Image 1: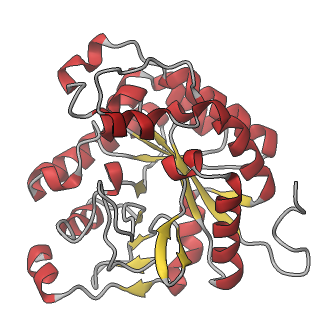
Image 2: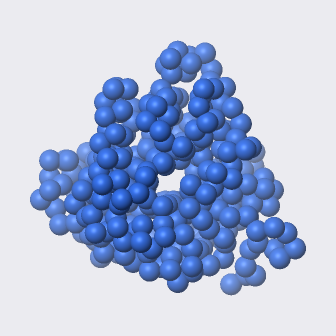
Length: 306
């Protein structure tokens, strides 16, 4: 292994470590082949996988944020309490992984209210952070920020400022920004790096599993050293579970994205959490609030947000 980053000559930047807590059958890749009406009949694996993740974090003595579906929290309250007891932040991932652009503003407000109420009841702590399923706050849904702020959320980490076939808001800032002129709430986008003058996704998930570990090391070092900002990394509990069921009737691209690299994921994560410094997203939000820039929406998006 290369010498651990950061260099001892400079101050250590603490990066944001996050887990999107959903089960293997609730992912966007399978949303058109596994109906929500089937979920209750499928054996869940999320609890055992979350415990593996907690143990992996404990080995490295790091804390993280677990963005959790309300659907999952309702069925696994003991898991929620164990996350909190281990010193991690519990936050909201919405109720059942429906993407924000599938809601009206009123439906979205109910979704985040319902999820937060369940998670707080299970955990006994206040929920102040939110991540949209599949990073689905984008140029179509800037109105979602107002709903979050009105319900008292302090930060969101729901924007992927890249071009992608499933998500993305490439015009959004790469680092923390204030989406509302009347609220102190900030958005902390998932990490991107610059390669050949273009933004590339570098914040974890499938990119981390599929690409060599050296790519993530390079990207995080770029963000820490060149931009002097914390990276925001995410993954899912099902990604450390190579024995999970295979959905043979899913499209080939979906199967490739979901199953590639599962066997090596835990090992790569172990290297990542030992090589860099990591912390909870609420801590990152607190530190980044002072230098968050204001989001200036184009006229068309301003009309949508109004």
